[in-house]
Amino acid sequence: MPPNIPKRNRMTSNVDENKKVAHWLLACCALVFVMVVLGGVTRLTGSGLSMTDWRPVTGILPPLNTEEWRESFEMYQATPEFQKINSQMDIQDYKGIYWLEYLHRLLGRIIGIVFIVPFLVFVGKGYIRREQWLKYVAMFILGGMQGVLGWYMVKSGLVDNPHVSQYRLTAHLLGAFLIYAYMLWVALSLLYPIGNGQPHKSYSRTIALTGLIILTVVSGGFVAGLQAGKIYNTFPMMGKYWIPPDLIALDPLWRNIFENLATVQFNHRILGLTTFLFICVYWFNMQKKDLPLRAEKGIKALLHTSILQVVLGISTLLLVVPISLAAAHQAVAMLLFTVALFNCHTLSRCVGPTNPAD
Image 1 (tube, one colour):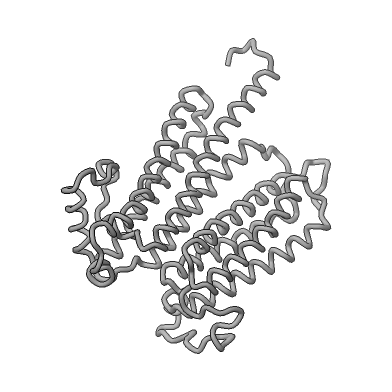
Image 2 (spheres, one colour):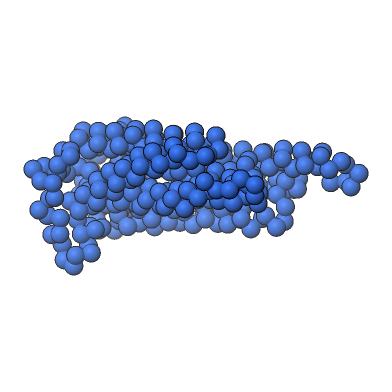
């Protein structure tokens, strides 16, 4: 920037540049959001194991002729899923599940392009300064690692058991949430610079609540990985029981937390209801606080989103996991996390030196 340009103009220019970078990051966040939902639909439709190899570069094109489709189908026929579950499937049925997994992987590649190309442009124009490069490079590396983790997850279902590991699935889901959170936080910091203010006194509670939401999401990942939502399809009781008799059926005891369908569902119920209760209490307590307008709107949105999420979760359970409701439940989980993270950012530096924290 030439030195003869007035300081006010330089500041305005920086704000405009930051907005452009922030809007790019928010677009990437939106694509990751869609990626998570599409991944859920892929899992719910049993499409995730339809592509039996992983070629990050050369695999961008689907089968383009009859011979390529035949080769792809023959590779699928050699998998445990086909042999143990889908042996009646013909090539037309196979195409139906193939396209969802293909679109999921294609979107991952698109996200990579949408990230790296504008990043290089912004670096070239000076919108992203040298000292800021590392955080964006870290985002790109994490995205690449997420792709590797996705294949590692899929590979677990191509060996003996025609189901992906619930551990790997949950790690893949958590990875998507963490990448999303990182990009969203940086974008919000560009749009709403936190400056030198002090955190609101409720900031630590907001962080803790966001952590509880993530823990509930993790438990939901195990429910999804084990298909534990397809048992005990009653509410509030689990069948005839408040506490199912098979809660600690596995040995050693720790395996029940991650591998026992009844325990995994029970834990998700408890965590989901606990999270909802804490959000209600949090909302009630925050009504007495002196908050920025953005925080007031964000906390109200958190309550409303949590109500919707509870309704979706119970409905998904009672109706034995229909694809539309289950996908919506996963999407709203990410929306709830988004609102919680927005509130964390708003309260992180909202108190100025002359306005003591409430």
